[in-house]
Image (cartoon, rainbow, N blue to C red):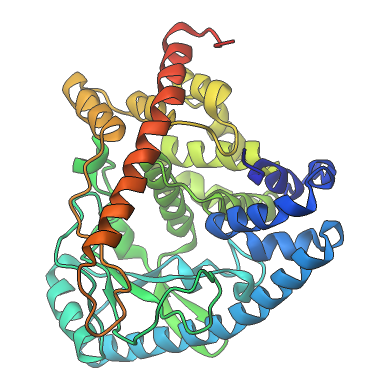
Length: 399
């Protein structure tokens, strides 16, 4: 049983309801908090639903919020150091997500958990950027490149930090991802022409006295939608991804200037992708949409609308995002490849325990347990996925 839908209902921008929270037993609150941690909504939930929380949950979130302020300051310091190292070598780049999300996607950046620092760097500079990051102490956490990723292997610092089951540990060092593309067409099975041009219309953003390069406002929204869809189709969507799109839509719902610019400058190849993100945000968090955004949602293909009607609820079971993915892929051979990879995934990357330790190695027993848990997860997902296939292809609910 998951309690996340109850938390999402309480975080709606309109028609918010805490009724389901009152039915959660004291013993079940630690599980809800864990689900919020993994969904990256704990701090937002604590800020907006404080009066509905039992004292132990409120105290725990207050502690998390205080720790996250310290984490934010450390992440910002790391961003400054990275910026200085790249500028010293004349390497152009943009920040993706992270500190670039404020103020459009989040009210208070210190209430936003951040675990990665994501940069986009043109392909002809990526090797120089990697060398610059090595010079300030970052090194690849693994040697295997994930074919589904849009970035080089994750880079970290060997600080000796060990995971202690605390998502807000101030000492948790941020990892670094150097992106060389905005969309992986080979992995997704469909192309999104024009996204490489995002680079040409970058702008300057500011956090306090720190100025840094980022995508312009229209393309930040588009990239947010691309990022959401990639995680949705990959089966690892965080509710935070949806919430931040909803926040943007809610607070721009009367901004005629922005949406007029969006209509004239948004990529046609991204319209469906953005509309999927808009509808998911509206359905989950009841945000308002500007009429132009609402029109994009209404003009989604019939098959996509049908998927939302059948499977678009928060915390769905199984891998029923597969049917949405197949709606977006035209070739039968590619559809078969996508279905095979989602139902029977093979993880090629080597999993390392405590990678921040200077002498981190391959803990064979821990890795075996990790892979066993992943295998069990995929086995458990088979039944609801098969049930979902029946619903998708027959249109009939399983009783």
